Length: 360
Length: 126
View 1 (cartoon, rainbow over the protein chains, first blue to last red):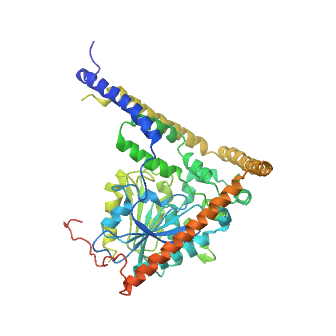
View 2 (view 1 turned 120 degrees about the horizontal axis):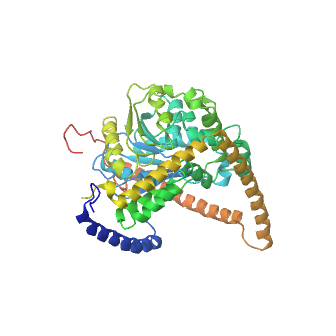
View 3 (view 1 turned 180 degrees about the vertical axis):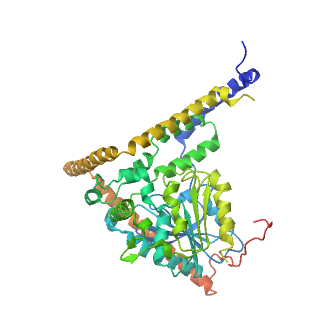
């Protein structure tokens, strides 16, 4: 009998042997997986500069002999932990920035406590971010600050930059930042104002629990969790795969609750009325039009982002008032564009080459 | 090397990938309908209300059994968090004092590198 085209009969015994070895390794490594605790994340040395309720400001210790004049403040998304940008050595965005000579600060969030359910959008945009900027200025001795916002951290940074458009923000970098919330079609449908009673939800439960946030993310790709478990089992013999899986899985499921009033504002102002896109957004009575932003801006978006689809992000660069502006579309998804092997070779070098000239 | 199109392992992996894509795509289409939103929000709204009532009931039961309730455990965790927060504030103050002392030429803290770095010129290693 002839072998089907392309099938190399001589390689079959080797292939079988390799599969048997992998099957044995799977059993051994599977036990190890259950018994071990996974890699330690977020371990780049840092000092805590301020803790105030849900707000945490870190300063990462510089490692270069000389650093750029302008410090960086990273504003994390309020739904997730900042260690996505500081995974393990070699795959840490923070470590990369430090080695390239940047002075890095991070505004990270912890779970808002039940009594913080009344935190509003203005607490984030008019209090927490300006407070962190002031502290970065004090600590670094520099007036100018570069702001980097990831996902909803980018939205908060845009709101901040729109209102405080006369400084001290010198550069703005947004990663996967939505501004046209109509284009986040599934989130938009989940929160359809005809059926989703946000007032009743917030009034009855206070802060929106992390399980609810996580399940709404997972609903965007309902089969992916099961498929990833199958892929994990297939690759459990491969230590590098398992390490990467554990890092991403731990971060992905480590979702934060959202303060009730803040969630109410996101739903009504952004999801329902699309105010940021329509230039009708205001925060604490102050108009926030992104056309007022004139600082140099870089927006990095992911080609296969299922959380913030390109259509939801693409108008940002067109709408800002800056003349020095650039959008870069990179291969990858919402998370892989900023963290992991994909980011190491694509986003990080791009960001460094854009920012170094603007940090002196 | 064998062609991937005839490799049973590659075929299995490909099938899993295709099934995942197909199911996600099908589910996304179903979830984009207003009916889905109506049903999910009805069920979600009812279950949030029911969960709250059940929680209140359990709270009373645990008090009766002389056991700590979840709310009490959360309160205790909050007190621990608050202590942790205060320790962090003390640490932050110590760091600030340390750097001020260093800036004033007193006891040196961890010295900061100078802010003199320039972008590498073309071709120069980073």
